[in-house]
Length: 165
Image 1 (cartoon, rainbow, N blue to C red):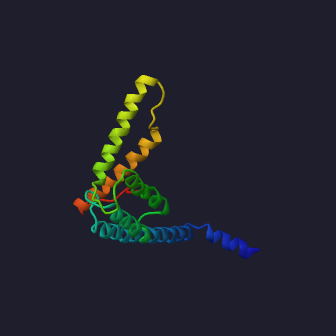
Image 2 (spheres, rainbow, N blue to C red; image 1 turned 120 degrees about the vertical axis):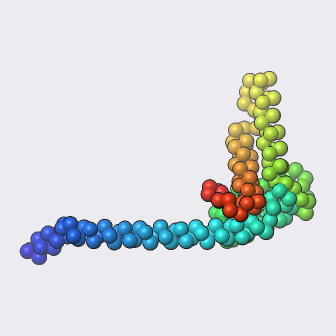
Image 3 (cartoon, rainbow, N blue to C red; image 1 turned 135 degrees about the vertical axis):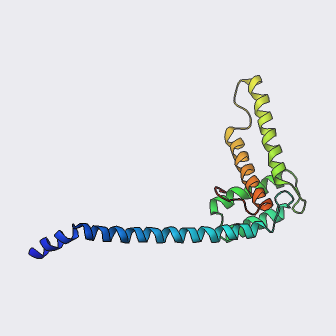
């Protein structure tokens, strides 16, 4: 029983607590360093893949290839891959052939403008919500934002990739 009292007295001492704090701090720093290293590798891989493509002049086939490489390298998640793959689906639906070059930023800028114009034209005459629902415009905007970020990185390799998802 005295051993328990003795050990609890030492475990509660400032020296032991400081030692535990130091261990926790070291573990936290190691985890941060590992995360930073992983982020740097991911960023490097992401940039390397993007350097092979130009979203302002890309074919649907090349875009699909780029997404597949990004996904296989782990730089985009399964969910991001599925969401971004819808860009290819929309290109196909708009009659863009697999080997026809397209400016994706311009394509989505025009798509967003058309959706906004449709919403504005429909709103006053019917008094109801537009035929293009806000989630659809939101989705178009998200894809356009992603494409603009990719385009910026492709045009300026020093640009950051924070919040590319």
